[in-house]
Image (tube, rainbow, N blue to C red; front, side, top):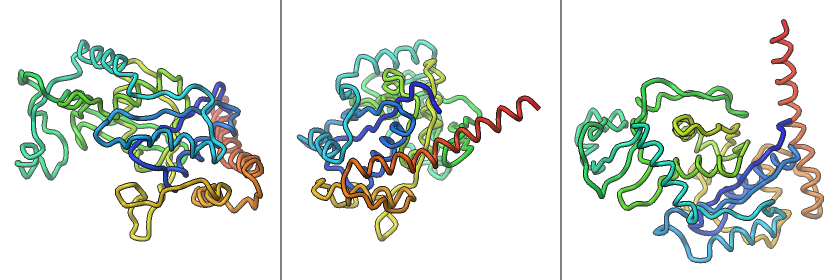
Length: 299
């Protein structure tokens, strides 16, 4: 069992929550409760052009109707620019950033580069005046971690992606930088999210290492898909949730997480049954793995 467990759910206020959002929220909430820890809500509002007015308040209200409220004051990323700027300055002082004015068209003009999909380092040794994007200089070699669901996952970021953007040319902060700065600020020990973000994790780990920040544990779970096999999202017109049938919506998310229906008649009953089942699946298995590792160390 993790001591001082701290988890979070961090939606972007680009529209109403849908069933895919609820699966991520419920999984992170259950994992926190099963570990007797804290669960926080963070609003990732760092991309104003994509935000919908009032969406954040609606998301928070819906989560409350579904029985999930933040254990601490909600953090809005729009208030965190100074922290992101400080992190960017630290990376720059260590020689890990450079400005880049390459357009997407320029980067894909070379068939070899387009095929590889990795930034070719065009601006690494150039003096590029602002306004320009800022990229993180990726060093050679793989970075890997053990995911609680997926097992060992490793990626050579230099080969698969190359130097990635941490601040856009328009001054907006990239998700990869903001998320690791805020995870450290909020002392997040465990990140529970969709498997579509699995390959984001090595990039985030590189930034954590460069900034001397801790790396939390990760649990990546299958995402919800529509009949066409597409990830449920606002772009695919996923049906918004309203919380009017709270137990039914929770049971549907619970089913997607691979559990049998609880048969609960209330949110409180659902939570009690779901926490117990989650603890048996995810916490007891952790205890078994920890005990096995300890035995192997003594042998």
